[in-house]
Image 1 (cartoon, one colour):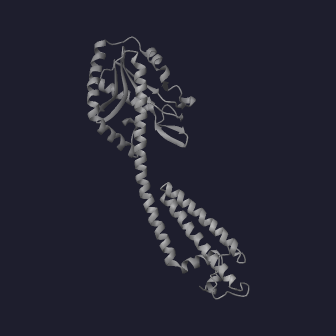
Image 2 (cartoon, helix red, strand yellow; image 1 turned 180 degrees about the vertical axis):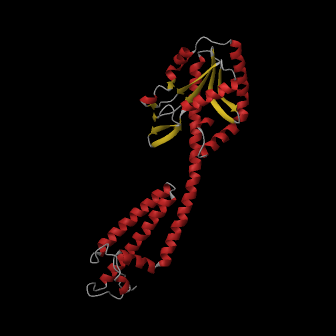
Length: 329
């Protein structure tokens, strides 16, 4: 193939020395291999955009490889590069020369780009499906870990002899809240928010989110202190007796380490019984009023299973929104 001298005169500058086409070939091959490696990594991660970028880099590197190889063949045939271009001169090794060479083989280049675009679209779609599956698996695993932590807390409290309800879903004026554990104590009702987290947790008492640092990265977590406060307020509205003592605690049933600024918020499961026993005081209202409130909560617990699906859908929809409130947990 012959490159027009007019086009050759418009070069942006050589990227490789013409006298060293072997060096150009070696560098182009290395670049092509590196681009393919990135393509492979992007395919594994289902990252369509990164794949397409790497694929275009591979096409460019393959074009330079092709051009350099044709030049080597042309030099071997006895072309005189100092006095003028040989009839089968494939063009100089330069940015403009390479672009012109690729444009001269447009059908092949367009085909390669089209294949890359189709692969990138497929990776994008399969990546979206994969994220859905992974998110569902993570939610299921989190539910299992959370249920195990709640079981540990329930067994820890069994020896105290207090009536207990687990996973009670309250209808709080059109929205629902799920309370991990409710206790009927001698002076009122206690709501427990149980977390079975690991890693390092940082944040502040009033923040909407805390940050969890574990091996492999970090993630945002809803502040359980805010969640517990929301649950206590919902209980107060449900009971409707301002004289009744209703309070809540966040319980850490996992191995998480909390930053010093927030270490006072979660109660470690190892000292939970002592903390609760210390906070139970002499009742300021009659036991009959506490019993009446507790019976209503027992009835709500019986209705919770029928509400569970709707509550899960409500929470999922709130998480998907951009202006969702932490109050729905």
